[in-house]
Every structure is written in structure tokens, then in C-alpha cells.
Image (cartoon, rainbow, N blue to C red):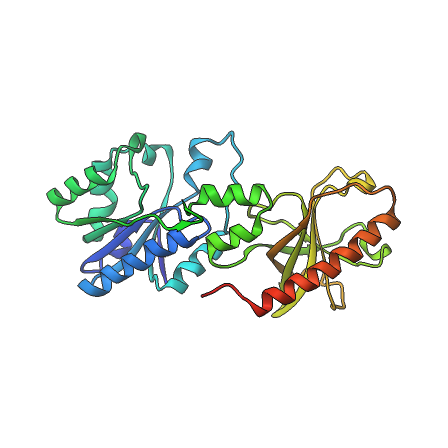
Length: 313
């Protein structure tokens, strides 16, 4: 896959079909947009170019608001490549870029791609003050020699699929709905680090995830699948502050069912299947241990049912 940060890198492409977006999470709406762009390109003999931005525009325009991504850059590009994308223009996002008028953006960054078709999402806008709505882009396209197609929203549960909605799901711990919006389980990844050893003392040794670069679901206990070193384990994952022990730091701890070893330093990916319960403070370690046993039993059942009825492809 070709990834570049300037349109000049794609000068060898004779004619293109283009789509633009952040593609954070590559949810079902993003997937439909990319697939439609690829269809248009296939029908017209065009090369497909996906235009995106780095960093996410919100981190530049509203730096005072923390913005954890829904997928890492590598994950996002791998998902796009899996859909069939072969060319990505990743523009450095700056306040200067954001201040461009729609016409200046099109002239400076789209026309060098020699576009014949621009495919945009149902809520797409471009340029300064979000003034580049699809009707304006269609007029620019008529003047500059390319067509503009706007795809319809993808609906789930009667509402459009969006990155904002996905974030709301995760903030509420609804990983089941998040999975429905993504078409795959929501996942976070990082390295296995040393913890405080309390899980081992309770009879449930845990793999502690360090350095997750993406948004974590709400604090609580989840049935998950842990993937590391080419292996997969059912797991119970706790996200929280360990209130039973007076914790003051957010941790992500996973008890890998039927696994042996410490896994320190290995890369760990956690796929979230279901939320078991919210974060709780227990009167003592023995009470916590009994609850963890119940969590494990429930997770085994839910993950076994999930394995029998996986998400449709």
C-alpha cells in the first residue's frame, strides 16, 4: 500500500476516485463509504485514493479536550488495506490547512490527484468553518471536471453509525453495541507490564496492559479475548482503579483463562465481547475473590455462546 503526505507522490496515477475522512475506528459507515468509492473506481477504471489527516483534526482545533483515538494509525491503515485500498494521502493537519476555503483545498490537494469522482459521506463537510457542504462541492466539481457522489448513512438501531456514537457506546461500557457498529469486536492493545501481584495472591494472576493508545471502555469488568504471540485466550478484563485496595491509578488487568506463563513484555490485544458488571468496592479480598470466580464462570459461558454465534462478516 502506498502512503504519502503530499499529492505529488501520486502523480503517476492517470485518473482517480477519491474519498476523504478521518476514518477513526473504520466503523460500518466508513466501510460503506470506502466500498462505494472502490465500486465507482472499478466501474470507471480509476485508481482509488483515500485522503485522511494526521493528527486527528480535533487534537489541533480543540487541544484542551483530550481525544483518544478509536484505532491506532497502523490499525486504521490495515483495516483500509483489508477493504482493498492501495493509495492513502495522509495530509498533515494544521490550523492553516483548516483555514483553507473549500475551493483552495480542492485546488491544492485534490486536483493534483486528477480526480474524476469524489465520494463523500452523508454528513461530510470540508474547509474553513465546515463550509464545503456537498452542494458546494458538486458546483466545484462541475467547474473543475469531477463528479461528486454522497452516500447515505449506514443505520444501526435506527440511528446513523458514527465515530461519535461509537465513543458514546464505549463511554457507557456498551461494548456489544460498539461491536455492532464496527462489524468486529472493539479492541485495545499494548504491552504486558508488571503489576502489583494482587491478582496472583487471589488465585487469578493477571496480564497488565500498559500503554494503550486508544480509547478505553468505561470502568468495569468485561468478557474479552486476549491475543498475544499468535495465541488466543478467553479472558476476564478489569478496567478501573481497584477501589477494594484503595487504588489511585487506572489499570487494565486481564485474567487469561486456561493460560500459563507471565507474558511480560509481549504485545497484547484485548477484544471486548461483553460487559459483566461495573466497578465495585468489596469489603475484603476474600469477597473480591468470590466475585472474580463468578465473573470467570459468566465470562466462560458468554464467550462460548459468542464463539457459536460470531458476528456476521
